[in-house]
Image 1 (tube, rainbow, N blue to C red):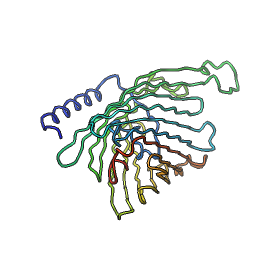
Image 2: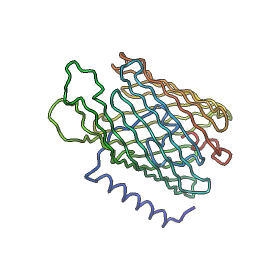
Image 3: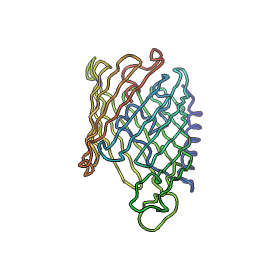
Image 4: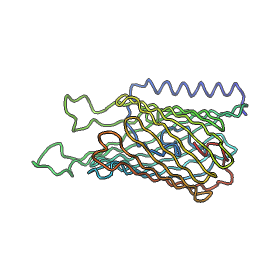
Length: 317
């Protein structure tokens, strides 16, 4: 355990960095990749989860959205994070590619987290992330009715990314708050109609997550959870999730995303090291009439599960 004096010093230091970043005049944000199975790999939305599982693990997620829609989004993400069981510091790396029609976004991020354990078995974890993002549009590949359009050219732009987050938890529950993309910027679209307002759009995003694990019996676990996401452009969106686990090997769940989708999920711990996850989104908005929903695949491999965490722990969040 750590002293109260050291704990207060670290919290004040983190709060200073957090507030300074919030009010920085140069901060812009865009929506980063989002997955339906985020509750099993929350590194993407909160850097405080780096090393939270106390094992050396690699996770791959692939999402195919709006299936059947021409130029539909496709997103792939590969992440690694680690924390030694006896250490309070966690580390991680993530690379992703988000493709939408002729536009693509590729990003590389590094993560650092630090844990502050307390005497009542609760833990506060604070995290930072930083990296780069490449925004690329290939409008020169468009098939135009009239050739020679000056807007039909390709462009590429490199931009920095910074994120902050906090996580407070015990064995049975957790609460997380994060702003994963403080400095991530998005160029204004050439296809925007109306007065040009500059090269950047501001779209701050705030994530609030929480969940609880109920031990129904020796074999069954029930985990309700929620995610509240707010952005300056799209407003508030809420995910309500329910996942049940049998013998710590088989999971089934569903999510309701307000105004957007109903999600079904299947999880299987194939071996102590290897997990498989599948999800399907049924789109409930009007856009759902034009496509067949979204499919998602999650693969995770843990290299040192024998030294990791147990039942009723951050393995489920």
